[in-house]
Length: 71
Image 1 (cartoon, one colour):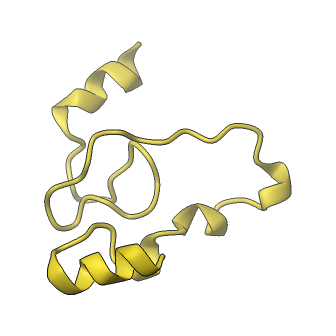
Image 2 (cartoon, helix red, strand yellow; image 1 turned 180 degrees about the horizontal axis):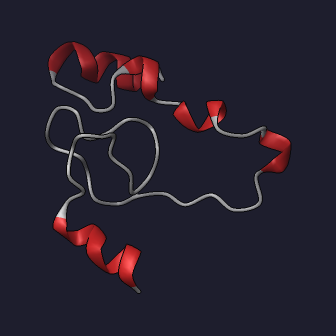
C-alpha cells in the first residue's frame, strides 16, 4: 500500500482509501471461494467503491456492464 499512498499524494486514485477493502464488509475471508479482479479502471468520482464491476446508487452502471449482467 506504500506505493498507492505515494500515488494518492500525486494523483487522484479511486476508490478512496476507506473503500479499498469494501469486500471485507460483505463476507468473511474464510467464505471466499473465487476472487474476480476488474481490469477497467474507474476514472470518475462516485464510481469505484471497492467491489469489482459495481457502482453505488444512484450512479448508473457503465454501458460495458450490460454484457456482464445480461449474459
